[in-house]
Length: 88
Image (cartoon, rainbow, N blue to C red; front, side):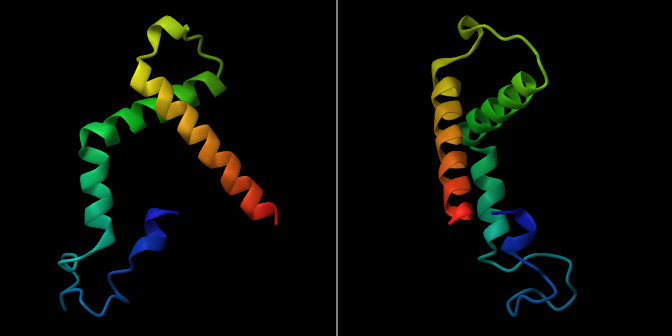
């Protein structure tokens, strides 16, 4: 899911009238909090490493923390599931 698909402040009935902030239960706030958490930062590092590997950067397995490697495996599996679902 994309951030822009989560909330449109102009369409949200609970958003403040002036459009200057989000509603109290905005899913974007939950996403921001999750991305700033310890686990969110691990996922961000894993995604960055996956992008670097695609670009041809050489990273040895010794340079990847176990939690980041596990996150990379989960991300790859979830991407595969998403692709399979899209092809149906």
